[in-house]
Length: 478
Image (tube, rainbow, N blue to C red; front, top):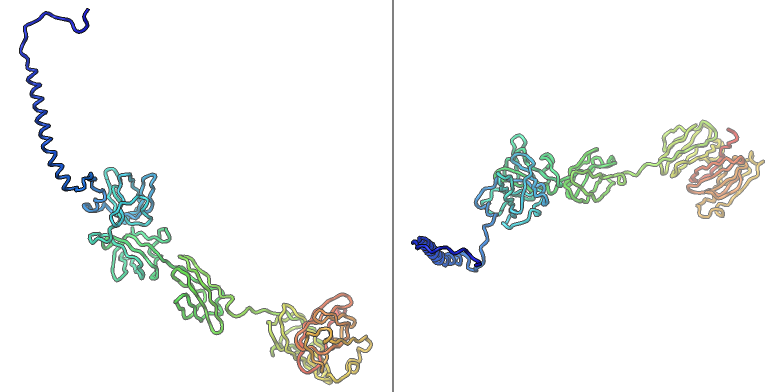
């Protein structure tokens, strides 16, 4: 058995056209190859002229859209989401916040024609937008080429003195008038603001297209200064940086450009200064409490006067005192106690503590001159106070007990009662009443501790050329 195909009886051969067809096809292929061969060198020659380096020529840049096609609009960049491929922007012409998708083919360009990434766009940038409307896709976003004369967009920085009119929808700055619509976008501290928040001193960056303002960025805004405890400075002057306010008024609020300023207030002999930090849209308080008149402190004065019915004068003003405390401002005051038929008590006294007690014994006018005092230094103790001779008398040397005190040895101080009470001079034990000691010049305190334990402290002032006499109140007589 033979492998292959089965033999058949030989037949008479017929003429076939297959060879002719094959020949035609071969001839056509040869002619086509020749044409291609002849054309290729000429095309290569053109490429070499266009690209002498011989490197492959890239496709035309997508950024070239702005050179041949006007933008479909302008947008203020609000957010770029690179992961989602989404650009959120504000359309100043429609006054709407919009979003549009972008992809790897979207071309982003800076203001000098250099390709940038989507992440290099910043909040507030105004961009020319080229949009594939059919697919709702961003083809290109370009920062306006402001340096080119053909660019319709513009930007002004460091602008101050802006004036606007909401009725005519006009804005004036740098001597020029511009229009705006409801879609104008104003940014302050990264947030949208309103025109009414702009004042003449604010420093601005303004962007727009042709005669329209699209965007205003407040680069340096303003805050406020109020004064606290300003009563002593009303009518005086306030200086904040180089700004001088001639006359301070109560409850005023001053508008000041944000920044840090050396500030001062003055009126007459009163003056104060501080460094104030003014923050945008915030209020800074300049407290003047420490710079005006010093606080007025008062002494609650209790008087024990014998005999009853005497009249009290403080700095020449008659003052009620019986059954109540008298409020006296800190400092030196002239205290006068007078009663008909008795010597008048007069003393310049210093008050510098919250509470003080003063005991005064008025001597009859027939005796020596008294001023809360009695007699002269020339009389003996027994002659002056015979009625106290039944009590044990104590004489104390203040120069020995309290050598730091100033004394006048020509005169004396007498403490006549209450008898038997322990007497302390400036908290140093002196002895029991009745007693006497050299006259102390100036202010000092006498503490009286009665036999029943009652303790009272009196403020005393020694002055003048006279003896001082005190009969302090006996609590057992109440």
